[in-house]
Image 1 (cartoon, rainbow, N blue to C red):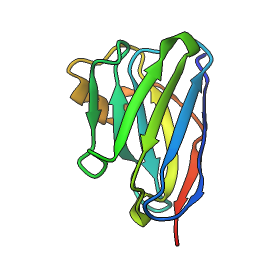
Image 2 (cartoon, helix red, strand yellow; image 1 turned 90 degrees about the vertical axis):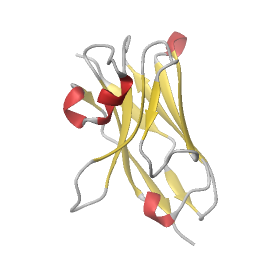
Image 3 (cartoon, rainbow, N blue to C red; image 1 turned 120 degrees about the vertical axis):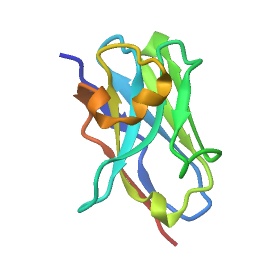
Image 4 (cartoon, one colour; image 1 turned 180 degrees about the vertical axis):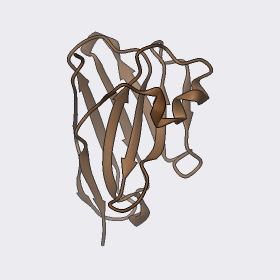
Length: 125
């Protein structure tokens, strides 16, 4: 059973940056980041395939967030720049049972089998 653990969240001001990490207990293929606010549906943020050459972002974060990975460490990262109050949420990483193609299919929560517990990101002045 693959286990995922997110870290790196916190309280920041608008315009600040954060880097989230997703540490996996084993090898991963396509990995995605989602976020959730209480009372709302889980929202797709970004996804990356095994090679790292395939990435896909939601329109709300494109140009501000960057997803990357280090397969030697079984880790996936989410660099978040120019954070806005509307980015406040619990951020979760998820791993798919296979490498997704096309990578845009990684925008669906149903693609993923394994989920972490999440890390809170709060953007407030």
